[in-house]
Image (tube, rainbow, N blue to C red; front, side, top):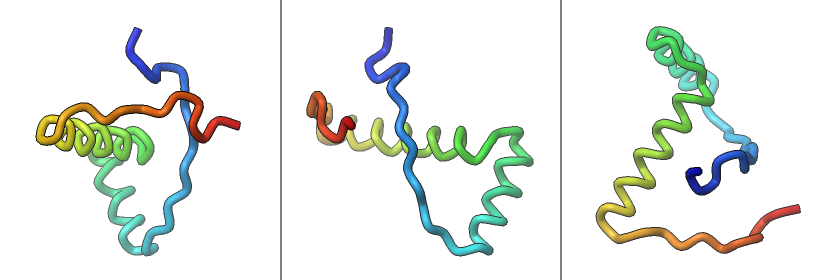
Length: 65
């Protein structure tokens, strides 16, 4: 089982209304949800960073309620 599977958190993002409307247009044209598209972008960003600098250590229990 992959690390982090089943552990989900929500995060609010404040965006310009026009940018968000255009983003909705893009993701709908690709058959994705906003959430799935953002998750894809974030995964790519983290993978790129880790490829360059190595694995990012996770603090167990940090931020849990």
